[in-house]
Every structure is written in structure tokens, then in C-alpha cells.
Amino acid sequence: MSVPDAVSAVSLENLHALHDSPLLCNLAPDLRDELIELGSPRAWKRGSYLFDEGNPIRHFFYFFDGKAREYYCDNAGVEYLRRLAHPGCYIGLHNALGNKKHHSHRCQALTTVAAYAWPVVGFMEYLGRHPAIGLAVSGILAEYFEHSCRKNCLCRKPAARSRVAGYLLSRLFCVDCARKCYRRRHHCKYHDCKHLIDLWPLTQAAEDINLTRESFSRTLLTLQKDGIVDCDHGKIAILDLNALKTISGIG
Image (cartoon, rainbow, N blue to C red; front, side):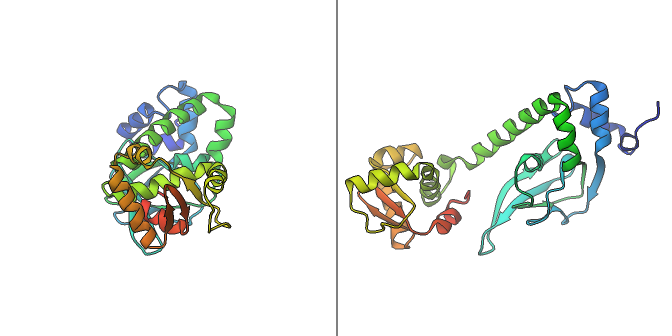
């Protein structure tokens, strides 16, 4: 039996790393080798991009060597780090499973990077035929989002302003309920505003993100002075949603 081209192009050390990776380690040997054959080894120089914002989502990667950063920029050009990728990391796997067709952020090599790349289209077709691969993907994504949650957890934000902005965004899932509650208790001067939130009592809201009630209230007032929200006894009208997303750093 001949050795698949993709396998022969990978060093023995990197081949072992692939075999031990979360995506492949629990697969049957024949299925594992077929999946390796589906991809190919790639390399990038320091400073180059594995993908850039707006690029079509065509591959995801498993890192052998090097370091890269995933980040995005706001409208003012300020950079926000999503995470650093090291050997053993998967990059872009969650993108392969999403509905978006283009990358919403960037991945830049900080050193020379060696990785294994799988084409999204071919992988998704293969995934549909082999449920065992789906279980492995679920495990990888669960770990990825756990780390992402820990990094972006609101109570870990160093600035109260970022915490409060992120908290307000997190409450938008119940906008319809909040709007009814707001109007029932209080006449809303922003009757066309779609983003109305009832945060009463403020003490509970402050405790949710490890702030004192005084710090929470003071931060809301600064947001009000900047024209981003309007506050009235725990009833919040969000006037500038994009500004709130920028302040939160996770929007």
C-alpha cells in the first residue's frame, strides 16, 4: 500500500502530533489517514497572514510550530486581541461550521508558522459521512469556547466601563420583554428605540459583574453624558449601540 502524498510530506514528529491531536486521536486508523490525506502542510513567514478580515473562509488549521495572533480592529483602527495561537491549537475550525462566508477577523503569524490545513468544503462533506469526526469537532469547539468565555468574562474586564457596556449588550436578548416592562412602569421619551432595558434593582446588576452599586451607577452616568445611553431609575435606553460594542471590546 502506497503512502498518501499528504502524509509523506509531513515530518514524522508532526505526523505524531497530528495523530495525537483532539480531532484525530480517537478515530480508527483508516479514517484518521483519510482525514490527513484530505489536508496538506503549509508554512507562513513572520508577519504574513493566514487569513485577513474579509477573506473567504476556505481552510482551518492545526499548528505544528510557531505563534500567531487572532485579532480584529474597530472603526478607529484600535486592535483587539482574540487569542494567541501556539503549537497544538486549531485555528478557524469554528468558522468552518458557521454560516459566514468571510472571515470577520485576522490571523497574523508572529513567528515562522508551520501548520496543517484542511479545506472547509472537503472537510464538511467528509464530516457529513462520518459522525465520529463530528464528536471530535464538538469536543474541540467546547474547549475553544470555554477558553474564550474565560478571557471575555465580563467580571474579568479591568475597566468598569467595559464591564457595564458588555453587561448592557448581554441583556439585549430580552429586549421585547424589557420594552413592555419599561413602558408599563415609565413613559419612554424614546418611544421608537428598540433597545430598552429594565435593570432594576441596580444592586443586582452590579453584583452580576462584581461592581459596587455606586461604581455601576457612576459608570452609567458617564455613558449617559457621552450620549450612548439614557438612564432613569434603572430603566436604560441604548442610544448608540455601535459605541457600546466598541467600549465593551467583545461586541
